[in-house]
Amino acid sequence: MSAGSPKFDYDVAIIGGGSGGYAAARTAAGHGLKTVVIEGGEELGGLCILRGCMPTKALLYAAEVMHLVRHPETWGIRTEEVSFNFAQVMARKDALIKEFADYRAHQLQTGKFKFVRALASFIDPHTVELSTGEKLTAKNFVIATGSKIAPAPLPQLYTLDCLNSDTALKLKQLPQSLIMLGGGAVAVEFAQFFARFGVRLTLIQRSPHVLHEFDLDAESELEKVFRREGITLYTGTKLLDARRLGAHKEVTFAHDGQTVRVQAEEVFFALGRHPNIASLALERIGVHVEYTRIVTNHRLQTNLPNIYAVGDCAGLHEIVHIAVQQGEIAAHNIAHPDHPLEMKYRLLTEVIFTEPQIAAVGLTEKKADVLNVPYLAASYPFNDHGKSLIMDAKDGFAKLLADPTTGEIIGGCCVGPMGGELIHEIIAAMHKRMTVHELATMPHYHPTLAEIWAYPAEELAEMIPLSPAHFSRG
Ligand SMILES: Cc1cc2nc3c(=O)[nH]c(=O)nc-3n(C[C@H](O)[C@H](O)[C@H](O)COP(=O)(O)OP(=O)(O)OC[C@H]3O[C@@H](n4cnc5c(N)ncnc54)[C@H](O)[C@@H]3O)c2cc1C
Image 1 (cartoon, helix red, strand yellow):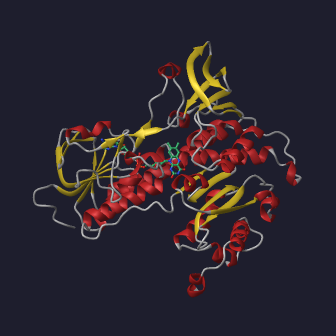
Image 2 (cartoon, helix red, strand yellow):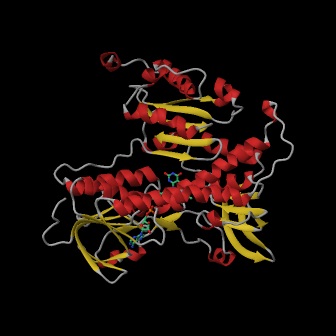
Image 3 (cartoon, protein in one colour):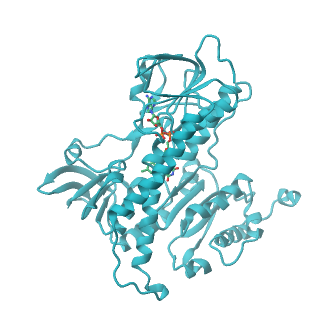
């Protein structure tokens, strides 16, 4: 361990012990820096474990099992009466989360760094005041304070006491009907969970389609499945009003030139998250904040060169492995200022854990068009693929985008069974800068879901002449 910088208590102080903060701490301590993690939450674990990725995926998997059990006829299986015990569904999720959170608490408390339970706010660029009343100094800081549920765009929504992704995880019983406000990842995942457990669901989304950062083919596929499963979808809406109506809650919105009113027992607010930075008193030290997020360069440095920000508080991508990677890079850069690393987003991946799962890496067609990047695209449907027919999982497709000159794969999208797993083949291929020609000739075991990638790869390979570079690579 370093003896610390002579003038400061620590080489690095990390504010926030979630995924980004823990990754930064482990890396900084691993590089021999005298490190402290300051964590101010009531519970240890961070968003991913306590109220994000893990509990929601545990619930979605239960919903998938529920759906399969309710529709066994395809396989010649008969079930007499299917029912469920919601308390048990939630208890299984709680037990898993406790295990993950206990492990993270253990990692934080036994790491090669000091761990302090307190909220921190800045006094000057090298000093924070803790909620315990103490002060602590550090040569460098990594801010990793995460995000919180965004404020409501309509003040009337506050009178409804809406559910959100925090409170829904603590429900003791299911409502009979629910209005989902929003069409992003959190909205569509929770919507399918509730609907598959028998809640009458209406989803109201402002943009013309759900998941608007994906291509239209992916958005439309999910909308098709949602409608088939009985979810009522309103897209391209504008919220106008919200109020209580006896035992129900009512939301009024404009849609297709009409004013529409929908009532339900509960309203779920899923209109996004904002960086959680209010408690840090950043205004005292002049850290640059834009649209509520801390601005950093690709080295994760804010405008104050000794202060870094990682994860949701730096706000561009609310994705846990990005928070982790940013934490590691920030810590590396503090330890090795002469050999800095930069965050690269070429392999940016997003997965939506609905059924079908929706996963994309690199460029989408939408993004390529905005960035003016030339591409060729080809896709192949799961309703014409051996393994997915065996599984009766016929929704969706696998799509590749390739550079029209070199054939390098520049994007992939998989909507379909285990799309979140399947996309990793394309992440690996893009990581190694593979061409569609190489992917097309790579062996795929039969019959697997993964072999679907060979079809768009072959189609693109036929369209793109092999470059001399391909032969020289062997
Ligand atoms: C419902 C939901 C589902 C999600 N599902 C996925 C998914 O499937 N896959 C995926 O990649 N991402 C998912 N995410 C996003 C993912 O959880 C986040 O991107 C990630 O957890 C952010 O990590 P972080 O380290 O930035 O913040 P956090 O994990 O939130 O950590 C921030 C920590 O800072 C502490 N803190 C805050 N202020 C202070 C202060 N002033 N002083 C000291 N401590 C402070 C907090 O107590 C907290 O522990 C999901 C999010 C939600 C809400």
